[in-house]
Length: 333
Ligand SMILES: Cc1cc2nc3c(=O)[nH]c(=O)nc-3n(C[C@H](O)[C@H](O)[C@H](O)COP(=O)(O)OP(=O)(O)OC[C@H]3O[C@@H](n4cnc5c(N)ncnc54)[C@H](O)[C@@H]3O)c2cc1C
Image (cartoon, rainbow, N blue to C red):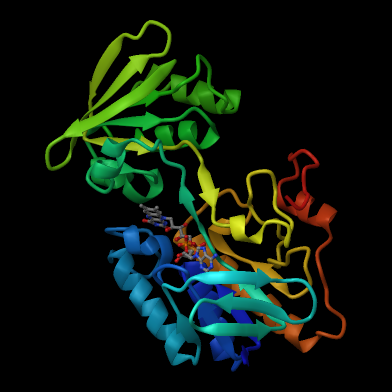
């Protein structure tokens, strides 16, 4: 037997919990399902100092408060479950969960977030949170006056390296290619910053240290020359993987697997909304996830009210809204 809700929210990070808070408060029967721990990436964040209204708190504390709010407003919460199947087409969306059964709803908010791309080195995992970070905005401040390494050569790597230089004594940018893929203006700004130096055509061999990171070992791709870079911090900016594999073929994604939405967080499927890091966007922060969750909840509320005339974003409109300069690659992949 299936259980029916007005809205199912997939993912219980800041985007999903915020959507739940708004939906619950509007007396909309809501289920929040998380395949992992409720709280999302916030759980991994030791200290959050850029969430307005809270001077400083652990990500876990903020997550637990959001979870309590969603619960108080009447949301049902399911976490650490195995999702067997998601079916988004048609008026009745279905989510099948191992050992829990089948859940249906006319509207779904996808807030499955994502994870930073990793190098995959064992020493990277060992120093994660002890010197290795994937977010300059979040952790740059902790390296004030220290020497750090930034890995990557795209726009976010270069922009984040410049941002890191505001705190760090020096930033060594290490890239695998002999040129940066970032926009020339960004590269020019980085090159003119006296705190930045650049090591090109490098493989990352190893992260070395004791309790915390002490150095990054790299080797030149062509000559094999090994360089040890003393560093208390290493920031890895080599991309981002959205948690959308399970949605492939059901909702329009771009070629990076990010969900296309318009400003109202509508996808190309009637009744399906997306919020937070899983969708196409430039800045991935708790504040932006929370904003998306709010908008998705309000749009879902409006959709439920006007379900006879469901408004849905067209693929072309989604593509333009997501990135006006993007190639016409908006397709279901
Ligand atoms: C180390 C680190 C530090 C950070 N520090 C800060 C900071 O200081 N300030 C700041 O503003 N931002 C920070 N960020 C970024 C911020 O945490 C994210 O932008 C934000 O959490 C994104 O929220 P979200 O709800 O979209 O996704 P997430 O937080 O990624 O949550 C998504 C949730 O969905 C679940 N999920 C995944 N797949 C499925 C599925 N198929 N079905 C159901 N559930 C699923 C996941 O288990 C997860 O709980 C940091 C990120 C990291 C990694």
